[in-house]
Image 1 (cartoon, rainbow, N blue to C red):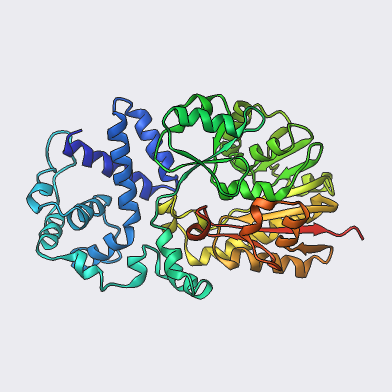
Image 2 (cartoon, helix red, strand yellow; image 1 turned 135 degrees about the vertical axis):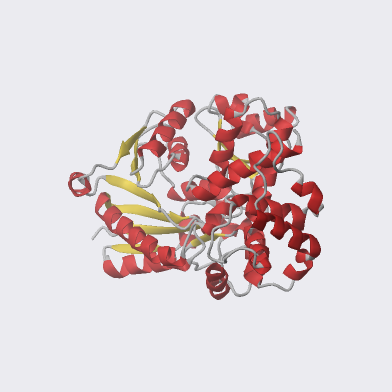
Length: 445
């Protein structure tokens, strides 16, 4: 692909990523589907480039602000991120970058402020100046995130922040309704795909190289699903059994519903509930591909209170994969760290607390609630659970170490220390997305 069309396409992708709430990977997938003439090498190169820009968001904006060419409160066009990236990271010459613009099939002509910016960048060694810049910029997080995590993870702060810039593995969950892990492992190895077993999940396979697994026979037949090992571990924590009635309270696109169905051997009943119909539609397609027939996807009715009354103490287990900041997935979704404001954490924790109170009505006596988030912030994790336990005397916290021991989850025991209350997965320690898990049991008396 020629350079001018390449840069133009990158700008188009970045403009959509930064102007919408859509996930970057879905935007890239849609773009490549619409431009199917592009070869696999070009798609991979463009995707890597876009994610490189996203992972350098803080430093790119810091450099732009240091030049004082644009008002600091003005949202610059996304092409400036690309220009800065090309200049600072790739060290391309001023004239070479400038010549990309105004050509046929390329982005429109540079404006005067943009030219001035390029000239300034060409004269200064911003990469060297950046080394003396603020730590939150060098670690590519918003300043409030840096301050909050420095309080919560003081002894491992640099390791945690550095992990946000690492590329996440591609983890697969083998669908035990259709295949055996050993067989899938062998078949992928025969295709020269470098695959390993995940260290904790009994269903997991890990691919370190970036490949398009969705085109594979194994994926198309529903024998494997893409699912981070951390998410698989949360599903495993539920310890659901065949014949149980289970509620996946915030089912989304059904990743954990699929795992639960496999654990239940397609026996019993799972209600996958969500407030977003588009996500549930994706879940229905995934469940059909996987051969799941003990799960039903349902949109939460507008009259939620009436629905709740009809389902009081109706489920053996309720899984709450609560909506959250998503901070545990920031290495996988680098754009997401710039979409969350500190003020939103309190709003999210209020939603999480309500979900727990609602679930408390729905689970049977002696049943469990498994509460999880993909957040690293205690405000969405321990604080939410503690408030719930203060308000609801009919529940007790089941210490995670005791839970693992009781269910003989030997593979998970290295994840926790004796007497720990919760499960906490960290990207730099466990090589999964960041996850939090708590087991709450409803008392029988």
